[in-house]
Image (tube, rainbow, N blue to C red; front, side, top):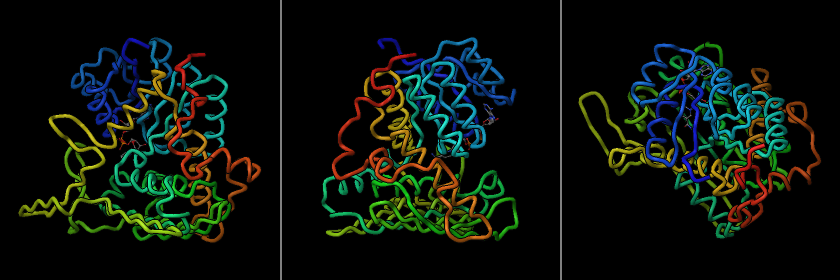
Length: 380
Ligand SMILES: NC(=O)c1ccc[n+]([C@@H]2O[C@H](COP(=O)([O-])OP(=O)(O)OC[C@H]3O[C@@H](n4cnc5c(N)ncnc54)[C@H](O)[C@@H]3O)[C@@H](O)[C@H]2O)c1
């Protein structure tokens, strides 16, 4: 493809706008936006000089010729929007999570496979330097075999009523660590246990904790609580227009070594009369007037995949589908707590076949999958 990749945005809210800002610096042209909120649509079109806007993606797809649809609507819309984009013959980048329903995730995988189209799930941590470094250590064998993975991701309490409780926290915060666990373990999940608690009494619990066991024996613990008080040092500031705290840690214990990572930058301290901040600078920092970091990397990657410059080897769709299966099992375990009924949450597949499909043995992550959908940028 010699011309810039033609992109449509589905959902121009907070994160959709950040995507628009990022695409401005990539070999891509945002040709249209689908956004049901008329005021928001007009505002974003003016700010980012987008010629055409539509209230719904279906109308956009009927009128526009696009290579890539970027789904940045709220989580509940993802499954339907991704399927609509695929059926119109477009590659897809979809913000996390891929879908909320394992049946939708499976339908997306089947549709993409049938049409030879790529779906890149926006699991941004795979593009963040700290997590990617740990994945590299595992792939090279420097840590030996992974044995135990520990993840914790706590968010500001004030964010929960503001937007957090529109879905169960496993989809908003937990899905990042479920994906990292899959990436680091290199095998599908075979059993697990989850509990949750509601502190604020809102529609969804404020916290959950889960233990996962993978087919190769790796154990992972994943915890997320939306209970960080306002007095905590802020880590999120700047481009997203959302100030507060993401307090996240990851630990990997291997047979030959360990690694730990904290998603913060204590080396940068900002103190004002009303806050102390340690702004996080790996996810979407503004440098030289442009959005950089993991967000730029993942959107540039999606543009390359859509252009046929590379295959979708870093975020294989099968692994995003597996993440949805695990997250759905945690959500459905719900208030009763207890063992995860994974078999009922998604398609039951043979363990060996599944291990191959998720396929993250040592060193495999370094090899592009040339046969992945979108590897040659073909349209159906
Ligand atoms: N990777 C990350 O770290 C990260 C951070 C923040 C948000 N996100 C993800 O980004 C996505 C958007 O989150 P947000 O905070 O920007 O939400 P938001 O509520 O600010 O924006 C969502 C937008 O989608 C629009 N919308 C609703 N239904 C639609 C439809 N059918 N078609 C098109 N647009 C539709 C809404 O009107 C709204 O403008 C979510 O999936 C969220 O999980 C990811």
